[in-house]
Image 1: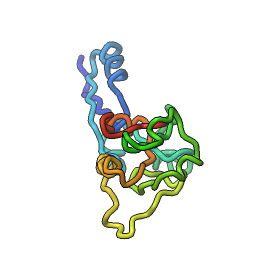
Image 2: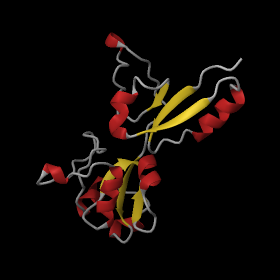
Image 3: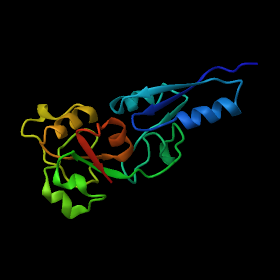
Image 4: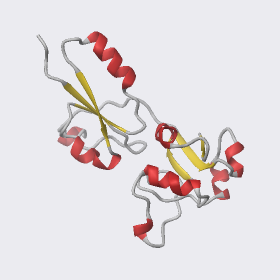
Length: 168
């Protein structure tokens, strides 16, 4: 008996392929459909999918999973490493890792995926100039305008090694 397809939504930078392979071997009677979700569509996706792999701010829990008003269950899988993305030819690109003092050597670009808990970025003089997403942010980084902090899996997923350096 074949069960209905289980939909697994996931945000960019999350790699669910290993889970999908294991699912296919272990649960042959229920297909698994992997559905990419834009980071800014997560709120709507919370009710659209059977399972959702989402990214939350450090120390936070996903909306709707608070004990007092639980509408869904959440499980913490791992803490993501934060990475600095700079142009490939930037002086920091040669470093294997960075610390907070290193961040003073460049302008941190504000972008929608920059969590408030991270070191403060330079705000845009005109808010309409703020990049729409991580990909647009990386295009600005490549021009030499500054660097960007983002979750390391997302940075590695979207960056281009010829024009970007991703430093954990």
